Image (cartoon, rainbow, N blue to C red; front, top):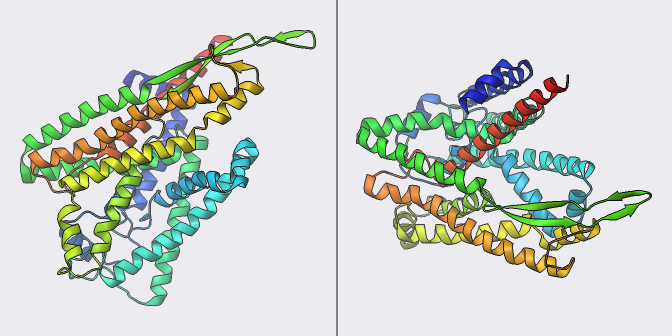
Length: 430
């Protein structure tokens, strides 16, 4: 892999793309440390040091590279765009117009992308208003008595909303620039940058407070899980497809044999994100209740990452969302109709309904294995916290983190290798 990167930097075209990607990532990280006007940076640091709970804000803070709880210019990170993309994708099931646009090809995809951008800006306004309101009321850091806002006026409130929403639009633009002029998927690389940026500091903190033996165990577990994730993410079930010969004019077409590649984990990291988000809502709501209330005490004692109640619900939600999201993204009836339209069939099965039933049977078996794999990857980091005596906010990685890091790394390396091969072929043909 390192040899591939060295060869890429020796190629002028790829070197330009790689340097452009690194430049955008550096500017993105710079924006995460620039505070929004009206924020008291010293008080924010004091409150962050006293933060000892895990909530929905910590999940969002993960994808912003720590910028959210610092209320920086890029505080919202890439989460509004991710949420908007998931909503638009789910609306395909509810709104037939969106499904028609998805089938129209490049024109329809451009329209869906435009809708995603509009929804991203709307979610940016909504989330920035929520975050600043939490900061003004003191509920962002419940255990901190310091005020994290230097200016609490309504005029500054509107300015902060405008700046954070503009930061979301700029991040979305950065991602599109990397996709168009750089290497890899821009949005995925920005998430990758945010997660990796926090890992060294968290490992250093664990080493200084709990001993470097814990750090060694954590690094070893990261490597083992990374190998497992790479193996499963690369695995696929190949269903053979044969196309019948047909005469068009005086030419014979078809007669070829190909296959449908079905990944073991077709839902990606989405089920883990959904499950984490739902479970984090409970502790966040409990912050608004009275500490003496029985339901608040029950949530605070059972909705922790070392509680068996939490781990059981987490695993079941991940399992259910894996089946749900796969059923949305892969439609056996649509695949069977497309194969029938172009004269394709699976050997041993008739085109049409029998093919769809066979594909549904195969995808259910594959999704079962993929869902169990997601549950294992999601729960192992939380189970590690019990023998290591780590707090929830001390763990430098989780199932979501590992899946994103390894997935984005694999995707980027594949694209670099593809472009290297294309460059080699061009030079050979010349």
